[in-house]
View (cartoon, rainbow, N blue to C red):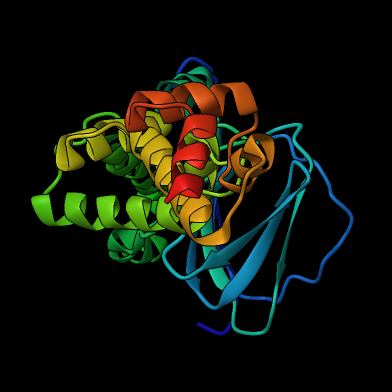
Length: 271
């Protein structure tokens, strides 16, 4: 694939349906340019290489298999190198808006990882007969929504996929528990899973809620700090372990350890 391919789809007037506008293979490098807005929705699939999506003050790393959306009126730009290629379908229509809303796809949650399974269908559609290109582009769009819906709305996928997702979520929490900004929302943005899916799947597989697991991890780390480091300031310990509020930290600590942080510090000093 050494050149761009762009199919324009004939317009139809039924705004309450989905109207795909064009279906494009983009192979040219994308230098960073000022953020710009477009009048259409776009769903974009990264085929090869690496790039960066600049949107809503964030820089989101993109690689092969990533699926991402851009939105009318939301400033963005795509920055990439020589080997970055991607395909996209642009669309409009009320039905498309309803599907996006149903799936929880917004400018704050617009990147979805590990979507390479749909690439073959996208690639096949790019070379469909021109007379059926409108049907093919709409089929690709609906197929993509269906693929995401299976992940975001009805997490009944294979056990293998569920296990992989849980391990990814757990690893992320284990490595970032000290960050006060860590939340279901932030994990959703970084990992590309709907926050309800994260909560559901983690509880189902780990038999403990994400927030409860996070608080347990932070409390255990607080105990380690007190035992090994001689930490004595409750607020300093709270902030170092990822709690925003020392009073909330004390409440969680007592629930899990059976005594307040101050009592635990006193007990460790006596030892």
